[in-house]
Length: 401
Image (cartoon, rainbow, N blue to C red; front, side, top):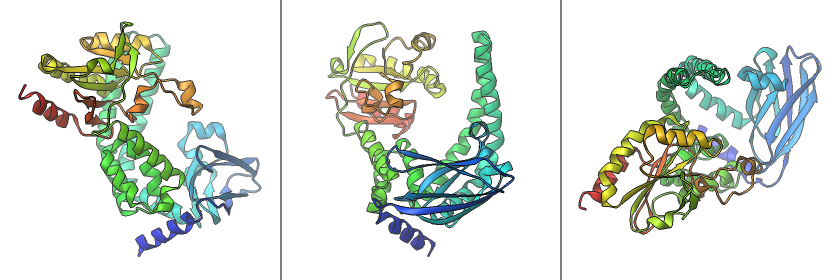
């Protein structure tokens, strides 16, 4: 019965996806006795509404129009909201009349009623609660150590001191990984069991680039047509299309760049060979940890027609890129920068020079295996298989050569 009700709710709002309907939020936050309270939420595409209203004796009202359920952020102090997770609340609002109650000391725990979508979010929050409780102290420890590491950079600490301290930060992050894996499973199970949910679509939007293309396509196909046309649905489709460009069965984008030595390099020059394109960065700990293994693979197969091209995410720190290549001893293969332009990216403008965009790269490390005809035959890392599968693939290719 619950699944049926969620489906009906999503379809009801989805059938009028392009039409806007009014919403009202009547709020009462204890401890707020004046001033303003703020509400920001997506309207369509990349557009956001930033609204504010006055508070009198803790009470306030927001009114607006929405075409679909959407995630909103509520806060009363912008500076505190940036510094503390307790100073803002993330909620799903939707057309209709809703009531919000809470306390100034913990805005994040505010309760919103009258929103069926928010009720779904609370269902997911309950499923995540146990893992979040275990993650919380580790996250606090990681943030504290990371802050100290940043301070060390500013205080001109020696490289040896920074590297020694970085190992402490990495050790805490390694402890967090199993809980992130558990959280991912909870999220993906929720997506499977709630295909018509705007909450599930919101999660999938951020998870889809990290799962295999075929799996992502299945989740997208299970959505009602109206949800596919929602803001999150359109972004999921965009991510899938990008992932498809860098997945097996697609022709590899032929890029041309100046390499780390200032020489011209084009993927076209490697036709007739198997090429592993390694998307990495000097600051990416898992990337650096995988370099010894890549060196082993390169030594094993380079005389059989195997090449590696490193695509680094270090466009804003050329020196760190070159230093990492030297430190890890990976100058034995070719290296170029991806072509990241943050000014264009922040302005939401296309950047034809960014290699990562042509391969659907959203996490590092990710490796793309290209055959002698320029076709992608393997993806390992974000949105693909693991390194064990890569090793088996290479062994199968070169075993008879």
